[in-house]
Structure formats: structure tokens, C-alpha cells
Length: 140
Ligand code: CMP
Image (tube, rainbow, N blue to C red; front, side):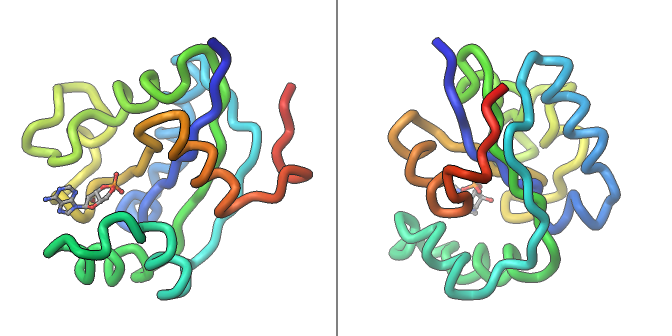
């Protein structure tokens, strides 16, 4: 089914100058960028985005990392976009990420893991609405 997912290129990958490299992987896999914005998240925005992880021991380090530099946020659309993006990303921990995945190629640690992608349809809808007005999402 045609799906949308929220993708974030994290501060480590933006700093490595691989935005285009990562976009190219999305495009080659049939995912279309239908919204995009570069921003540096405020602490409030990062804490709100990761609110489900608030009680986890890694929460503070995760928020500190996510506000440490600019991020590139996009909505990807395509057939099975949520799973397809997760396949391209590889495992959350880059040490466990399969060869050829974004995290295997560009991530340094479980926090500095290059990219975020929504994990399910419900979270995708919430995450997209968190960053984009519907008028800034351009289905095509
Ligand atoms: P992300 O997909 O952005 O969602 C939550 C982030 O928390 C995750 O990627 C990791 O970067 C980070 N994180 C740090 N430690 C852990 C952990 N033990 N389990 C899951 N995520 C973690």
C-alpha cells in the first residue's frame, strides 16, 4: 500500500555531508521526498518528538545529541514506505546493522546513528504532523 513515513537525517550525518547520499538511497528504492526541512531542533521539540522514550535511561543523551547540530527532516512516500525505509536504515545499533545499510555505512554509535525512521503507520502519522503542516506535504 502507498504509505508515508517520517525520516530524520541526524546531526552526525548532516555533519558528514551525506544528505545527498542518503536521499539517493531513498530515491533508488522508490521512495519520494514529498516534504523536507532543515532545522536545528530546540530542546522542547526534541523532548516532545521522543516523548515515548522519556523514561528510558538513554533519553537525556538522545535529546542532547539531537539538538547538537542541524537535522534534515523529510516525509517519504512510496509503496510500503515504512518498512522500506527501515530496511534502508538497518538496525538501530550500527554494530548490528547489515552491510550496505545507511547505519552500517554512516553511523558511529547507537545515539549518533545517522537516521531516524517511523516504526509503524500510527507513529508515522503522529511524527509527520509533529513537523509538517499538511499544506507543506506535496503528494505527487
Ligand atoms: P531513533 O530511531 O531515532 O529512536 C530513538 C533513538 O534512541 C534511537 O534511534 C537511538 O538513536 C537512541 N537510542 C540510544 N540508546 C538506545 C537503546 N538502547 N535502544 C533504542 N534506542 C536507543
